[in-house]
Length: 490
Length: 95
Image (cartoon, rainbow over all chains, first blue to last red; front, side, top):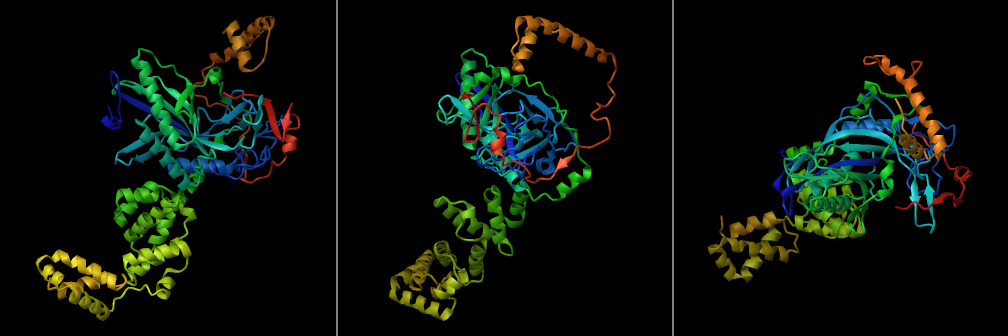
């Protein structure tokens, strides 16, 4: 039917293959100091109900006044998603009752959102590329938080989150596997973090997803979908989709039909279950909020934001591949986190980018992973790593010694050049000293010398011996050249 | 346009308003009357008329992104029927 319907994405049922169709609604908390319609702070945590104004608590007579920075962040995100910006949009009331929603309605955008259609390009590890359509992005208020474990008969409500600005980013039903869905959310998170419009912190709930899942025979029209609410980790999104798709296939294959409903994902069991108590809550009776005029933007306002957009991951990736000769895989590793790419670009600045990438990916990321550290916790700064790369480039140390220097800087800190100088780790480029070592090794191993004349590969053994004799400090290029001529291999 | 009894009860329930059968009967005719009256507007062709959103030409006021409010938890929970440590306390709502 389309390029996304790849055989490998199909799920085998009892009666043949099934295709899963996924659409996502991602709720991303806008990075701002104050809330969408009040001057209360947005920071996570805080004493109960401390970050709450009378507006957020919906006291009678309070009126919402929109935060211009939240509007700018939504526009910025829209531009980053290559989406159309609607210069006129409208806030509506979405009506429902819940203890953590003091207004009795959420201010959201229904028919006229601030951002229209866009797209996100998703590259999978397998090399597969999916272009996911964005349906819309709108601004809305977050609700408060209910705690259920404080008391046996009661729930406790904290409104600190109430009124914080969220962007709801709605995708088209363009995803065809749990892998694609996970890659999509992770790409979206990367873009938001590059833009600085959402911190992407899933543990703190800054990014959560409602996942719409349905199944069908390849080539058929859409099946009936179920919506899995509020999934708050990328791994859980994958698990929820896998479970839900198989649940639906089983029902249909047993001759049943799917009820369109809202479901919850239980992280403990890895299963989804029906949210029966909200069955009646779906009549939201949207209408334009009479407290708020339409949101009118000027093209200048949008253009100014467009002019300040950073280089985004897709552009960076393309540049790294084209200009630096990095492999798509290495480029992906580097661009996936904003902190990683900033670090890499610091190291690469004015240096051989390919060598910088090798050191950042293989040595630094390798070590960070091993010790369970994030890039921000790296004991080696980009300047220090750059210093090591400089020493290799200048021929002061070999790549092998560089790894020892890396180790020392990792555990003890310090300036790489100084460490090399003080600890006598400089590469020996003095031909006479190397020649002496070569001569000694050759004199001690006449049999190998004879062998080398027959089998040039034996020269490698000599390189190893000479390096050993010089404590690894001999320049490998110089050793190679000397050996070649002395063994008569040229 | 008429509203039937079931719709009256459904709207009341969505609004969390308890009504008796007698009240429902009265509301049924009142709501139908209101809708009939408003339905007169349908006689006008508004296909090419922009919706009016304001009486005077004015744009929405915006606030700067500054923390200017909050830190009044005691005031926030002052009217709550029950509170504990500045939390609102409500009957258990767990799923």
